[in-house]
Image (cartoon, rainbow, N blue to C red):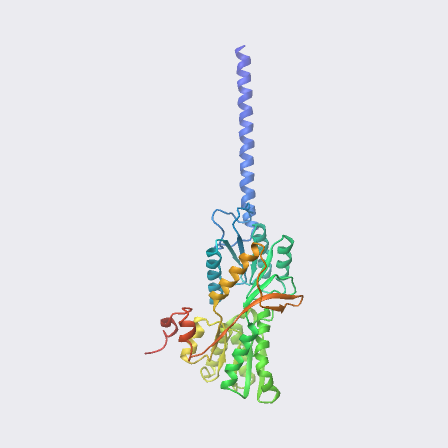
Length: 375
């Protein structure tokens, strides 16, 4: 009898041991799958997620609007401001803000957009690296029933739901108006942005809206016209070096796609002893550009109040996520359709009005703008 009881106890103990091992295996498998989901998310260190949410894990709907932002890059000063101000505006509206940055990598941006979609964002905001490649992002979002807002840069050949930006064609016009006022005749160099960025095309169109009559009259000659890969100042500097060498330093004016490319062009002009002698236009009102303007090496920039852009885009994104129809003041064709658009007004800035514009708005502190100027 005692022997039978002992056998039963041993059998029960073995059963418990087997059950414990099985439970441990299940727990290990669950942990592995969670880690693997995080790895598949493509989320680099430093990306911002809502509190308590693991990468790649879709949250249950809690009634809170989730706004996802996929950005091309944070390499330029202005995009850091955009991310911060847009995020602040989204949170102020009571929504969650999730952002990922693709480091100018198209495949990475598509992968991150897929992650945001999988996390259950209610609206996807896109700052595309490549305007054409980003059409895939729009298609994937729409397949999941998520609307897409194109922020500052327009996604091409896709059913974008809304485009919010500044009037980029007007940006180019302001640049050309400022430079032709200084130099109404002579040899001009145009250093554009990247060909893959549709905004670069819009800015260039605006520039040539103004320059073309001068060209037709034979007063202005475009001696160099080149795109700048990835907006990199070093690439713009190299382009400007080529222009200077081809024209033996005889350049009368430079219009650049943005302040970074303007800085690269000015670096090349300095090598020829021409910085401050040849007028140069940029855009974005970066701090370095503002410092060059007061120092006299850059003629002007175009100020696009980023807080205004961020707040308008955030307000419209949240409304779209709630199913509301966004207001639009015009249509912009992206190669496939006329996209409902909200285009804000840019402001030309030079040494005469810099205090009343970017400094008065608090975009840059006066002491920072003038820090290299002897008093």
